[in-house]
Length: 183
Image 1 (tube, rainbow, N blue to C red):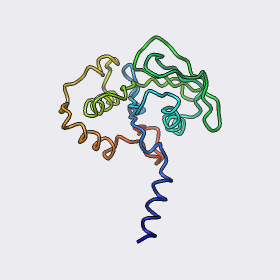
Image 2: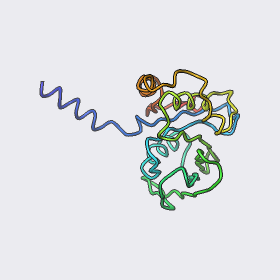
Image 3: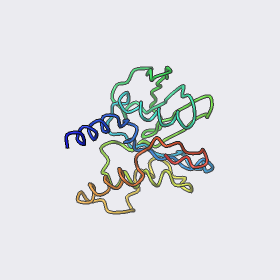
């Protein structure tokens, strides 16, 4: 019995943080709309939230050079982050609240809706899924104001969060082709 517990504990400690990244992108062949997907970070600490996001994006698109973010959406942030293998410039802006743009030489610019971390789980799930829809062309304000789908009362929030974590909301490290870029 001790061996089983040790194996479970070891497996959990090896589980990369990227497994819990709440990110969804539009399919590669659908580039309509203001955003190419959505990200629901767990806090407003950009330097803590960026590493798993950058790891997921760079594993699919290539090297990232720059991240532009809305300054008032995040706690104070340095001008650079140094993930393994690089140095990424962080540019704050007063334009486009609830948006983050990631740029790289190989893929150009990827713009993501940022669902605020304090957003109720059911609403956040619906916003992320809508933003990643191939046919959605909504603006960030329209997406975040969309409360027409699903239950939004606090009793359903844990159910939505569990659905998010277990039913395709979390990014997995399994490689996917660029034609199926949903993360």
